[in-house]
Length: 254
Image (cartoon, rainbow, N blue to C red; front, side):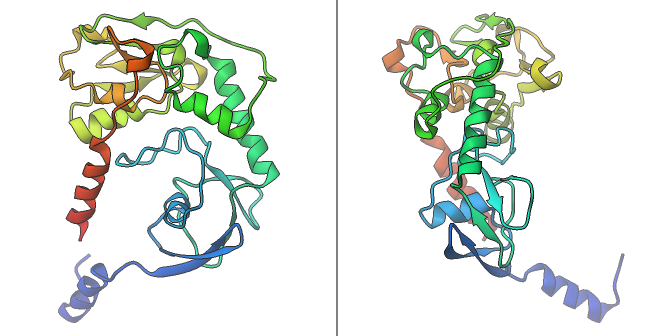
């Protein structure tokens, strides 16, 4: 729709107006935020820790794992902090007993769905999922183990993917698409049958789009993606490239 000249100038000015500043509380602490900021971003800016799994600085948000759920007073449901925008006067609680209980249940479901036996995993000691179980105090799995059998694809010259250890956070999908620009990775099927795939579900080593950059391996939170020929002590993830990309994107917006 094209406005008359005067109204068009008003509309153009409206487009460049800075985001409105809001105030609300997190755990009783008053904080301020732009209206385009998420609860997770504001919490971290104010030194309030919220555990995450699928979130990674420098990548877009997906809200896939739900580990970052928080309570918002007046809402009967729990909301993922990574994709919930700040609102004026909202009251957010990040560490209630209900929130902590649901986070542990989510972790238990992840462990029940696929094989996450740490003692035989290449990422033992360097695993985000393992660190979360310690942080959240998960000691048992109260659900029936599914442990459905998935393939291990070692067809790539340098890397391998063990789908049995995948938590479907889609970090690999996002970094390959948003940072490397290759979009080799994607997700196939639904529910517990979901699987990350390369190209059109071809063996990774036969992918025509993979550049072999290894970014997907470095952002994987578990031992699902690993480098061949590396010992457990050498499997520390190297994600130093992501903060720089985030900073450059921020500069482009100003």
